[in-house]
Amino acid sequence: MVAVGRVCQLNSEVVIWLVRDTCRVIDNPALHRAFQISQSQGARVLALACLEPRRWAGQQFGLSRVGFHWMRFRAESLRVLRQELETLGCGLWLCSEEPVYAVNRIQQQYSVTTIVCDESVATEERSEVARLEAEGYPTVPVFVDDLFRFEQLPFVLDELPATFSKFRKVIEKKPSLLPDRPIDSVSMGGWIASVWADPAGWQEMLETPLDSSAEVPIHGGTESASRHWKAYLDARALSHYKQTRNAFQGLMQSTHLSAWLAHGCISPRQIWWDTLHYEKDVEANESTYWLRFELLWREYFRWYSRASDWTLFRRTGPSDQVFGCDQNARRFESWKTGHTGCDIVDAAMRELNQTGWMSNRARQLVASHLIYELNLEWRLGAAYFESQLVDFDVASNWGNWAYIAGVGADPQGGRIFHLNDQADRYDPDGAYRRRWLS
Image 1 (cartoon, rainbow, N blue to C red):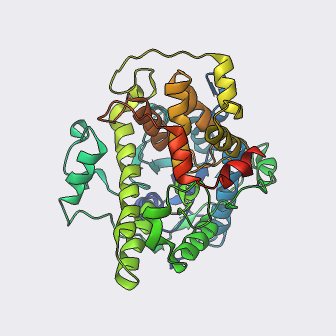
Image 2: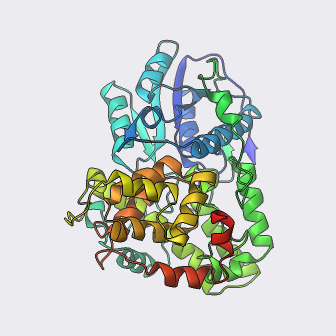
Image 3: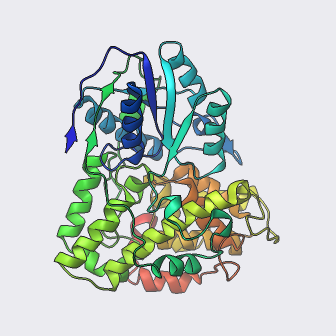
């Protein structure tokens, strides 16, 4: 339940809740913290989303930083968030400026006392916070989409385990170490309704149609996330998750939660605790554990990104490994467009280009092909995924690519897949390949 407070008009002081990748009201520690601060200061809360301007205007290796699948989903998620906030008597301020410029504009009308935001996971986000602080704005970073807060971890960031296996064992050896329970209520104070016109292009993003060929039609927003997750649990698909999660297709084969997680429409803590309730009320088996195992993988990459900082994005990766490769445009174009001659790779890349999504197993295979068979630099693949994926998030995408390339957290020094064997194992009747190559 959410307790609605009045929209106070008496005080010009505001606490800004800077919305990044957490497009939800329920179980949002940053929003909760913003209201705590506003109540202690007698201030109001202003919700601000800046629409990723640093990425929309930029390129990597000649590739767009944001794809239209991602933009559509983010626009839908923010529209739902705005609707949720409007039911509480407030609005969501949208702009296409960098946060520092948007806050400076707000400062002309109100007195900004504090900015509450997500705890950054990568270099550019940290730079945004640093620029706000350099302008004299106090910032309060909050762990919002992590399973654990920093103070819960049994190690300091400089001592983050070098591999996921070591990280997982450290976490699992402490049974008392659990994610916080989701926050299911927020005590609302005074809000400020939006007075800005929406940025140019906003409506066009909302009107971008969902590709009809997508196997799982996913729309942004908390309502869609909750409805899909509930259907997955009600179907008891969680009970066979480990056996089916590597399938290339199938509505209930994997959870298909990645886009909602990436845009913060559902919290990883909620998924964690829901699996525990499922184990209590339905059944507990290796599959129910394995979903939490995969959430720990996501968690590890978030902390790995923080620990690696800018080295995650260099050619030699955090491990500073050097190996021969190039950026041959012809070979890269064949991979991007799905014309390599390897049917499983080509099918997966065509699905990605058309829908913005591909399965986890397919992502590993196309990465292996780009790096080890086409001899291309791994960052080309990571940047292309960033430009296409509806579920792009910086830590998981770049962490996984570095892992496959052997310049990241993989103790084996890289992952090479036998593509024909993988295709025969996970697409034995060839249905997936026929679907995307016909």
